[in-house]
Length: 231
Image 1 (cartoon, rainbow, N blue to C red):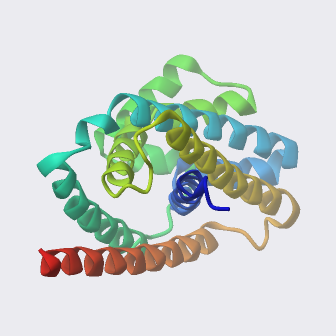
Image 2 (image 1 turned 120 degrees about the horizontal axis):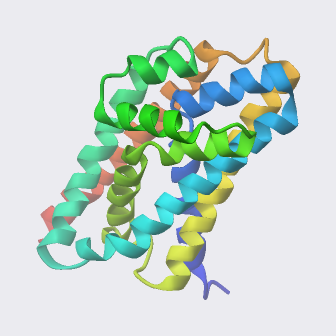
């Protein structure tokens, strides 16, 4: 009955991570909100589709090109500990988040190298279609790739995703569904009920996702402590 339980687990892990990690306030979310309110549902959805495609590209690169380096031996054990610290960091970061001003100023005011690279890529490519705006906004941020490399390594080291093609593909499909649902929700809310959806609402959602991540980190920490106790 549960012959494909590993694929189902990988799908759930991909869906959950894609959904939770799309919620934090950033240029792409604010772009969908603002553009949906100005140009309507279809335009905002097209931006979301571009963002999902870019997210999928980075996620696939992370799983196929880098995650295998972290599978096995001492590195695997180290990644389990690192995943605990990483989830704690993300949870605290999301809970302490603040509301930015708008997508353009948000990107320019951030002094990190990732945002500088993103801004330069946008200046060179000059995306005009809604799809390209979403695609470039995510692809222009190399931090997204680093982020997925860390997550892919964590998932494989925890054996939530097995290092084979079917399991990795299942996880990537989950990421597509999770991120796609979130961006569609943003597009629909911004186009149909944008008065109810603003940066402050997004920040509250981000803090809720931070609480969920802290709960997951606590469970992961208990598991690590139990494994240490057994050994």
